[in-house]
Length: 177
Image (tube, rainbow, N blue to C red; front, top):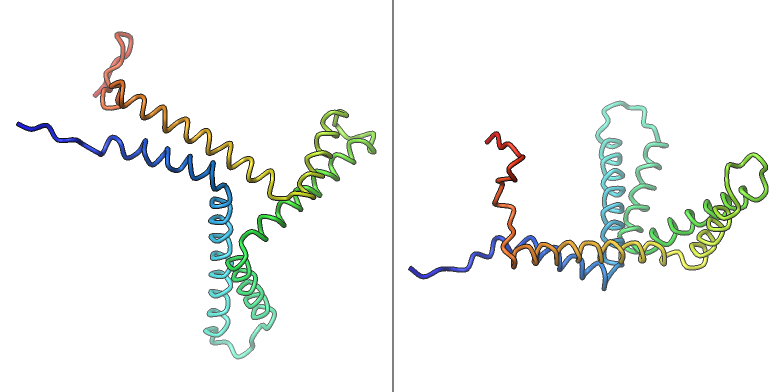
């Protein structure tokens, strides 16, 4: 009988390697996808609040709720249209917070920081203020390298014959199944 090739064990390592390569060579794709999801969620909440405002049977309407729903809709659609702006603004806010924390470490005698930690906070905060996308893209690239290494390890395990199908342990392990 002819032996056929089973692709199922190769799917998970192949998809893991592909995901790692995407994260390494297109790091903005992950952050853009997250921003789209956040924008869609905010717009969905705004739409829900808008529908609940118009479906409310009470004659007295709270127009503050209507304004909140419209603001959420506009904010959600603006994030969906320009997802990089969300990443840029979040990076700048984190940069400001880190910069203020580093300055606090120098100025305040009660701050529990060393000078090295304060200097590092100031440097990272200044970098995030100037280049807000740098740190997030670098973190995504590092995650991509880790995911690619895991995928390559899974491929090597498949090639050497070590598969997770063999659940029998060593002589010291008692299998209850």
